Amino acid sequence: MIRAGDTVQHNGELRTVCKSDLKYGGFMGTSLFGDSYRLGTVPVQLVRFRHAV
Image (cartoon, rainbow, N blue to C red; front, side, top):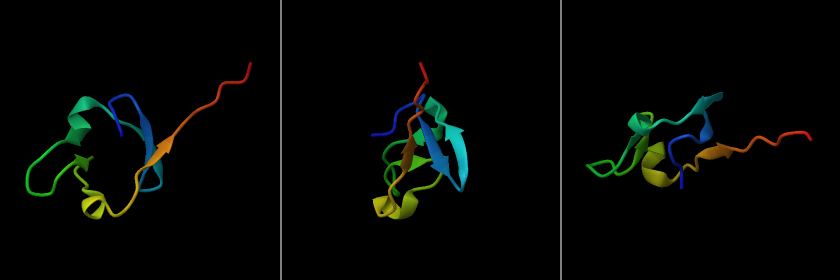
């Protein structure tokens, strides 16, 4: 589940998701950056950063 504050790869770029980028419901279902990712058939790539200690 993608939430506000997560970083995702979208169109080859790393982007941080804010609350206004997520839309729930409606005709196309859930969308991220206005893209429904083909109605959920294309997975969203979540990026996790690891910090060196």
